[in-house]
Image 1 (cartoon, rainbow, N blue to C red):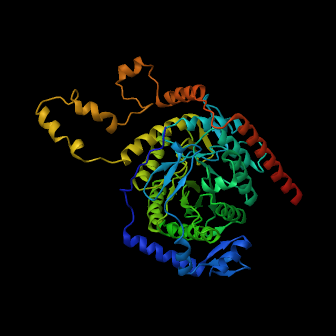
Image 2: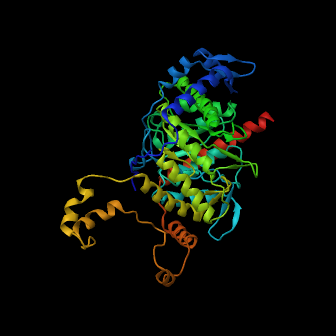
Image 3: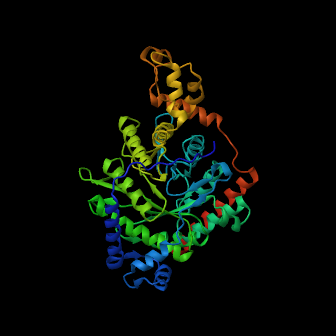
Amino acid sequence: MPIKYLRSGQYKVLSDSDLHDIHLATLEVLEETGVRVEYRPALELMADHGCRVDFDSRIVQIPEHVLKKALSTAPSFFTLYGKTPEFDVKVDTQGIYTIGGSSALFVLDLDGQRHTATRKDLEELTRLQDALENLHIMHAIVIPQDIEQEGFDRILFSTVMKNTSRNYYSQGMGAQSIRDQVEMASLILGSTEEVKRKPIFTIVVCLTSPLTQAMLRVEELMESAKYSIPLYIEADAQAGATAPVTLAGTLVEQNANILCGIALAQMVNPGAPCIYAIASGIMDMATANYSGGAPETTLLHAASAQVAHYYNLPFQGVTGIDAICLDAQAGYERALQVLGCALSGVNFIHLSIGMMEQMLLASYEQCVIDNEILGAALHIAKSIEVNRETLAVDVIKEVGPGGNFLVHEHTLRNFRKVNWFPRITNRKKWDDWMEDGGKDMRQRANELARKILAEYRPQHLPEDVAHELDKMAEAAQRRAIETVMEKE
């Protein structure tokens, strides 16, 4: 099903004055405190572009004029390409898209058993998500534990690419990892130049709070920018622990870190496509655990969307939920998250499918349930279309007091346009529901997931290309393992 463009952004939590104050505070942090960048080539490049750099402490201070110049080349409009055009994602600061689950180490299977994630799980969960109409961008929902962990990202790349035609939200393990992924994408697209022109994958670079950019992450950032691979520059702050407990303070800390990363990408390659991104949340003071399902976390992501848009940058938000099983908590946490973010104009709703236990656990059934929740949330975010046809004045006059609109041609013409049709939500009354088996939502999700996995088997790559891609991924992983062994 082609990806549909949807706008939103009606919900605002910050005023224009608030945004200006956050901007000024961020400039103060960047100029006076700075960011630790743990990669010397990046320090040298930033010094060449006018930043103040202490090479011993690896602290970079960015003057306002340097930041402004760097951000001026960051594009607001670009495309994330699918293998086929119907899966292209047109990026701007208004459209809303969804991204699948990421990096779980455990799986709740369709028999209700929790086990460590396997490569087969990655294949099947990717195929399951690929069949869901409300998923737009694919992530690797699990990190298989039955493969070598060094160089695992290469195996993820080949496995996901064989099971979807959507754009792939990938991750790296240093500069060589990016080069290996570009090479594998070149096999699919025909050349490195074609990868640069129409990249079918993106890279997420996760920055450390407070105000730190680790060497491997900066390597990935610079290498991706060189190849024009779109980047999600992501801060993972924890309000009350790695960032100020006040949400305004967290907005400033993560903003400084992200803008530093985006500026660096522009210094490497002016015009490199970047998405302002967070997976931030709060520390729950009762448990000392990170909480993504807290209402404060949704507020933080809604506000962050406004901050990103202040700089005319597209934004990725949303993080994992806290629930550890398929219960009411999982439903309300996911619904509040995705609805709040859809209404506030989050351009990429991240980790929106199948994730529980703060990204530790992926669930087949939850994938189907989350798709249902997303469908309702996106329908609400569309708002209400008002025109002569929808106002229906002539229809009201024609039917008149005491009439019936059900059989009117206007209803037949419009009901599929304005109504949302759920797949697993029950709207029957008790007797009809019992006659149909009396199944709860989890049971209905289980049945649908099994049906999809049994019937949905598209071929996203020619067999010879898929076979060669696996060989390339395994060879690249072996090189990564050998490199680590040589260093030891």
